[in-house]
Image (cartoon, rainbow, N blue to C red; front, side, top):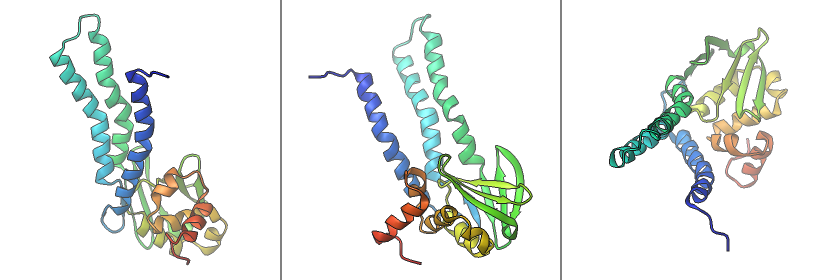
Length: 215
């Protein structure tokens, strides 16, 4: 019989729990209400970022108070306490600072990682689903690019306007991009983010199962 220590069981539990938690957060994001014309991250994702960033540090702090480490162990303990906030810093900046807006004319894109830019629907020259990165790109002939994560809330309203306003020949040249937008309309961001299938195949499977109606 194979006997595993506590750290091994912890690792297994983490591997199992992470996809479950991400799936639940994506479902919450799909249901979350954001103002019309806005793309942002749901409260569930913000809470997740705060909890994962600071709860481990708080728990370690409690252990340190109950059982103070020796002088040699103290630097290591401090390093571990700072590790989780450091790892989650980028996620916290992302979920709290990203907030895009859109209307019938185009998209106003605001991200802490890049300069502010605007894009008119009529100027979109390419739609591209980047399967490895798990985001949708919209590009203009002038080189303006915006990236949209399936974790964002409000994608259904955005995708409806995008399909209606982006030139038809552009949409027709990107089956994957069109399928990604249709999955967003159906609030299937979880599928886009976690499935290994292409958007076209995922859309076909969901239609075959009756989850999404034929259009």
